[in-house]
Image 1 (cartoon, one colour):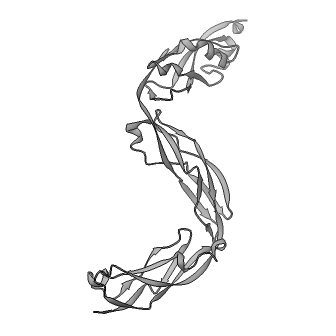
Image 2: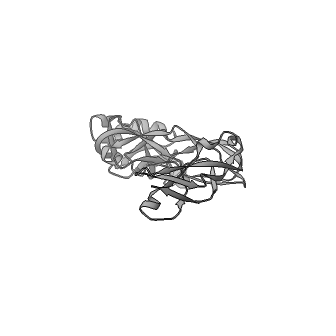
Image 3: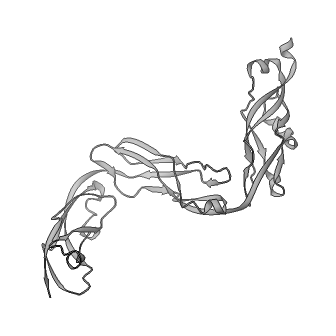
Length: 285
């Protein structure tokens, strides 16, 4: 009979803020965990000690449009509608929640995909990984947003990948309570294909020939061998690759050979080698 009686006990719960001000950035000056003074039966006190159902309650912040604090007791009616009917919240400690405010601004930043991918042998990313959306809106105080250049995703971890896929991945949570991100997740399209080897002959281009010397290269072309996705095999040709030599190696560094460098090369291909990697030359003055 005693367990059926009503008692007052303390229960901790987490606050979930709703209806945040749209033009004011804020962060709470106290913990988001509060103590509820709850009236319940002895059975609840015995079996649900220091627990409340649900484990969190909503606090509405619409009043912050005109003031810098919220009085929880003003929302007791709505709070009691959220908890079990056999429980009754009598008071909240602390009852008054204080907030620090700064001017709220919105900034658009690019999303950075954080990934740890491993592929089945001969497979890899065939073209650009597509993110949708590519950028997100970050809202908060201007001094905090000035430090943000991009927003990272959670780490995408996949092993032994051998086919294309579309996934949804969450963005990393902000460590600052007064910064919000929208949307909170993005779609990632991974174009995966089998790779095969391809070799192209690429004509060499001379750079930094400031004195307009007549320079002859031996050979005039180099063979570039690389891995390319089967779906792109016919598409990738000589126009996708630019091979250059720099005359500063002769005029400034006094080298007797030029080093071949690729100044343009498809991101979705994997270079194997350049043959030859160094070329002879003759300068006619």
